Length: 157
Image: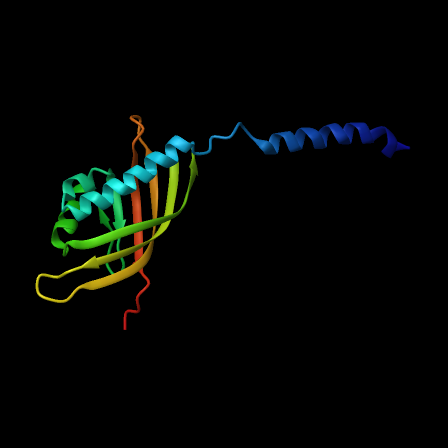
């Protein structure tokens, strides 16, 4: 009998709880956001191929971090620029973006890369690997890289 009287109240409480779990309207990335992130990735590739490291670094947040394999993180645009300038130039590079997701001005990009480097004295070196970026949306709509981490698929042996 008590259960019969409490059932309507229980139903209302459950309904309110389920409504609360749905949260605010979705603030997922828009198609424009995803397109802007893809364009920024293409701009990075073009800048690196053209050895325009200043342009590549502008795609990072001022305090952005690059986390390459087998070395400490490199933080800040000046340090990233110096690191880029110290590396052998890419002969080719392509990115395959496998996922872009996020919300509220925060996004991640996950993908793979294929690149070739020709050292000044040596043979062509090819690499394949994977990467993850964390990006923040700036007031002007640009999606700057806050964190870039990548690693090779090739054996270190």
